[in-house]
Image (cartoon, rainbow, N blue to C red; front, side, top):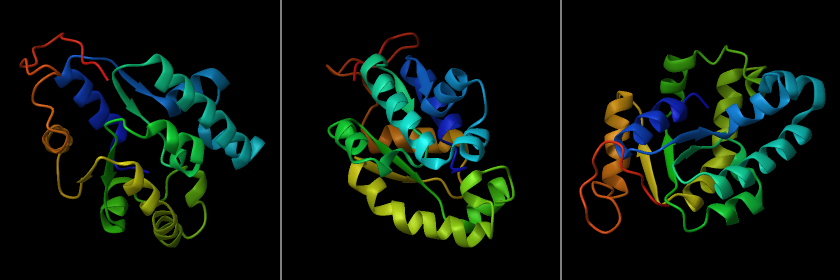
Length: 174
């Protein structure tokens, strides 16, 4: 939450010469309302159903950079779906989260005592993130450009599969 998945994902897609897709944006577009509204009006279980479906569709249809919502890994089927893919966990500590988003924004899972809730969410999810990730990249005190480069370095993606250097506009295969 607030780690920069969307910003870094778009930068990665640009550098790799491929498309970018965000499953949270897919849900918002399909539902015609914000995620916070879905949580309030329909509850978290309904949102998680929508999220599972959005992730399944995106993994099946999209071959570029894909950004998942922070709770997507809570679903065992989603974790299995991500197995073997070049998943990166972008991490940050609570102080960085406070600096970036203030923890007072309209994030439904942080509505009461945001610092404590953020810590509890991370304690509950961190092992899931690290289990599905091929690489962990810390985002603290880094620009989005630095994080994007660290992701490429961590995945050893300075070249496309087959060893050819990437050039703008070249498509990356999954």
